[in-house]
Image (cartoon, rainbow, N blue to C red):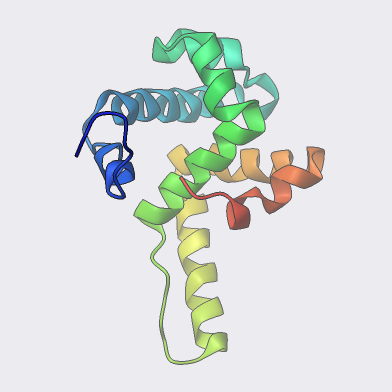
Length: 138
């Protein structure tokens, strides 16, 4: 590859590393968001408190997430991916029942209850936040 030409595989070279600085920053921020939701609830969640708790500069938070709703949506996506497997029971009805049971189980865990409540509050407050889980991919 010559200098000045962009290779077709250049985007692959810029792919995020699983343990890189970006991943560590995101993990620290999402952990801080969950902690703030536990301590203060959604009403008390602020970008400033998350920045302070995570040790990540406030400008970084605004650049990557824009607002508290974005933080909650990203955290919900992360937890959902890790904690709520997508069922395949062979029928839509069975899948929906299994998924509802998984979500209820998540809600029953005190650490995640504040997250689920925060997502509902974000969706009520902002119609855009209500559609974010289905449209965001991080």
